[in-house]
Amino acid sequence: MIEVRAYFKWKPVTREQALSFARWLFRQMTCVRGDEARVDRINTRHVRGIRFTLEELRP
Image 1 (cartoon, rainbow, N blue to C red):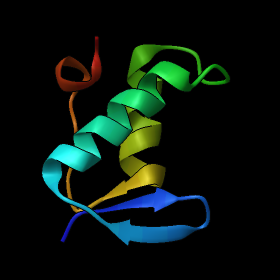
Image 2: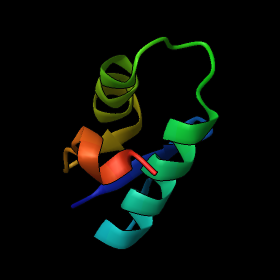
Image 3: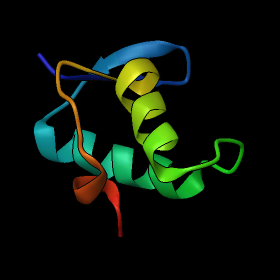
C-alpha cells in the first residue's frame, strides 16, 4: 500500500498520485538544501510504500 502524509494523517493513494505529490513537494521545499536531501526527506517523512529517485522528481 502506498501512502502520503497529508497534513498530519497518512492517506492511501495510487502510484501516480504519490508521484504527483512528491514532485509538487520537491518543487515547494525551500528549507532543505540540495536535491539529494530533498529526495531523502520526501522518501523518509512524506511517502510510505514506495521510494522515488532524483530523476523521477526533477522537473
